[in-house]
Image (cartoon, rainbow over all chains, first blue to last red; front, side, top):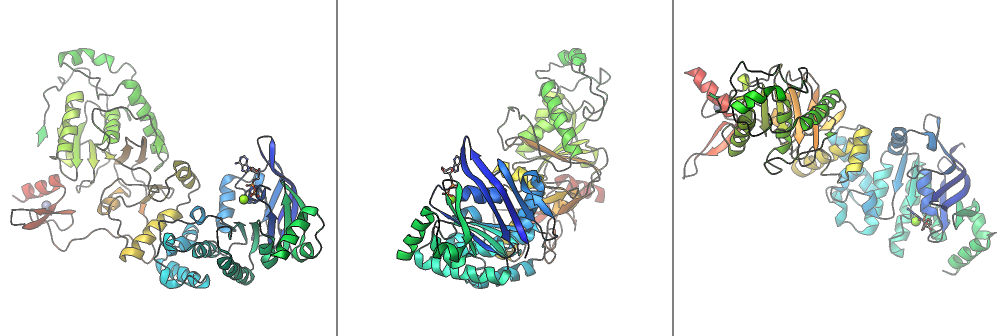
Length: 256
Length: 317
Ligand SMILES: Nc1ncnc2c1ncn2[C@@H]1O[C@H](COP(=O)(O)OP(=O)(O)O)[C@@H](O)[C@H]1O
Ligand SMILES: [Mg+2]
Ligand SMILES: [Zn+2]
């Protein structure tokens, strides 16, 4: 397997403070990586920098596209970055209103990225959207309802459909379960795990909950105060945490 | 029918050599007219706007012509009428109009509505140019809501009054974001709107201000003309200029430019059609308005373009 993302000495500053720093890792095709850490540890900053939504101040992020060409984000033209974001990436946000168009139907939400790629057959768009609403267990009969009438769990599942419909190779997710009840969370994670497995998409997911990482992630990065304090296979981290902060996190989910 | 205005300067005196935007611009042009101006008691600079403002607008228009469909910002001036009454169009007209121009003003297809009459009278007063209701006789046509049925000709300029220049605005409130979408030609969002139309009404229900792609590049609003008029934008021999006063944007469709109306493969663009013809002139292919003819609520369909309808009836006589 080949890496699709290489991250070297990455740092993002806010003024003279670091949001995240000294981040190094590689992500492989179809791999699920969780970034875990408490609030304020720099997870969202790192994720946004990886996705090119924030410009890195130090280091580099290199992405390999479907043709096998490598792109270093800091030297990439804005137009090219946006093209990658449209064609090869997805982004799922914690708050559905940031990731969905609340004023238009679920069908239009799912179809938008396809239309952005040039799909112009209404009947096919609608059929594809219906298929995806079934896949994410919303149901095709809700095709014409706006997401404002959906529950929080359904909204997050709609975000997943809206992103996966164009078959991206890498999806970034920032605390997608953050606003969900525990019972709803379990169903969402279950569905997500199945869809990710079926589609072979690589995922980088931010969560403050090591339990989420345990369910989904092949590998996990643990962050504290902007730095990665521990990285490795999720199972290894859970079985044998090395860093005191990770040990604290692990003991808290073991108790839960 | 020609309206001649009372304050028209005597012909032969210091006439301007053609339209300012297309002819050579003389910085002393207006001073040179001062005698004539005094003689005819002009209260304003020719065309109401001062020369610097006109120059600024013409520069904007040149840029707009060079980049078809691109919205050029401009420093909109206070005009003696409120936004929503065509201040954008009036400023463009004021910056373009020359003494030899013949002006026509249309509002909803008619020359005799309050708005059209006021704008025509305004330019009569501040320029003393000839005005007309005949599309074919006009060199400059300012319009709101319609394009004349009489085919436009090379050399004519049409100025459209635009309330909202940004076709993506309804879906994307942020100006910063819509600018990016234009810059990167990310127009999938416009199809979201059309998708919603079909999902809700079974067809593309947008019938006015129907979005177009200009020269295969910029997405643009054709202004609130009926989609019936959209095909007239495509490869038009006339220069088409658009002015939005409140939003301070102008844009252009130069002559003989491709203009495509957005659509889906399985829901192609279609113009309005009526199963009746004009009750007055019998036209089968003009845009029809339904009007109430008496207190009993009788109705009939007549051409919205009053000049076109009148001319056809005159010709038939
Ligand atoms: N736009 C910003 N400007 C200044 N500081 C910020 C900004 N965004 C985040 N920070 C700071 O950077 C640190 C990391 O924040 P963030 O990446 O949001 O953490 P997390 O997602 O792990 O909660 C925090 O100290 C936060 O206050
Ligand atoms: Mg965060
Ligand atoms: Zn008629």
